Length: 278
Image (cartoon, rainbow, N blue to C red; front, side, top):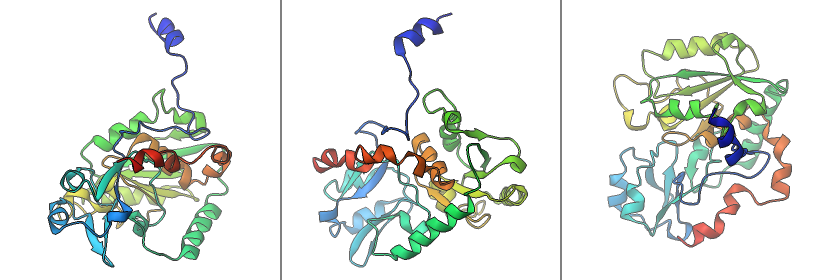
């Protein structure tokens, strides 16, 4: 039984996130960020090179729509003085417009209201959260990341999160894929038979906006036209830590782990020094 000495040698490999800070290495290409002091300098070449039109100029500022960005890195290669990769995975948002970075001055009270409404809706959910995953027409990469949530590294069961085959037992509908026209009825039916309260998580750029399949005859440019999305998880594909963060956000469980942020800087702040050197 080779697993016994291997287990003794490696020890506990399961992440302690979110109870403790954890994440990927500083070199992990988790998201695209516009360098603030260079946010006005992006050229038309970079804007035109983006395959999903995720880069644009808004109010004389260059912005990146993470709901469209597939992390191809063309902008970083063409203008490293204006764009850079960051290892952040806590990038999920409750509003589609909030995925546009750097964020424009928005209505903070409106954001707070959305968060409060979601918290009130799911407050009856306690220890056991059941997730129903539906592939709405993806390329398969998102499914690998979803499956990774159950491996020994992430082990979502330790947090009381379980995947279920029946939507009638599910609290969270996790949808991947660009919203294939042949799946819209299945996605909607899955949502309809789920008991209240229920939450919808759109995982990955394809599920948010269609990604590279925008305008394709066989897709609906994301799943938002099929079901009401509560949490958007950017990434192509979304990472396991990003998915875990989104699920915890969706069911308002992050508050239980806020103590770990009181004794240590947040994940984003933890890489500030590293990013400033790039």
